[in-house]
Length: 219
Image (cartoon, rainbow, N blue to C red):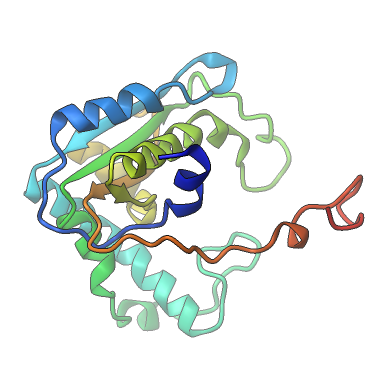
């Protein structure tokens, strides 16, 4: 596929057929995705390829509490898990909130699940002293994750970045033997999508690109 076609049609796939994603294709995906940039080219990311259905099911279970809160906040008109606007939804309401099946099925029905972590001892967290939620260190891992999804799309497969189980990071570490020096950055189900979207809804460039200043004229 042409690069721009891949970029314009790589969507968040959560519904998969029972077709397998062979190791040779997965290896090709990794072999091309590995050229993603990272801070200082330290390449501190690690990928665990999980095919065991029991382990994938456990990863899905670990994400359930976060999904409950996410859905409860959405229903209450809040911005889920937003650090700037803390939730006012009572815990008992969260505990009773229904978890939509796609949140579970994405991990249990995918051909493979990738657990991506990053070694915190090699990242450059330039925003660690700014008194806000840090995002800069993600530059050392998320370009790789996105390259994986782009490469998967190019191979006719798909997936999505999930983060719900990260709220139970310690349990994820114990489940998969991830060292304490690593932060879990993404859990990515991959497989053959049931359907392929070709038209994605995104804001137009003029809505989020400005000239010169944040409040400058639209580009």
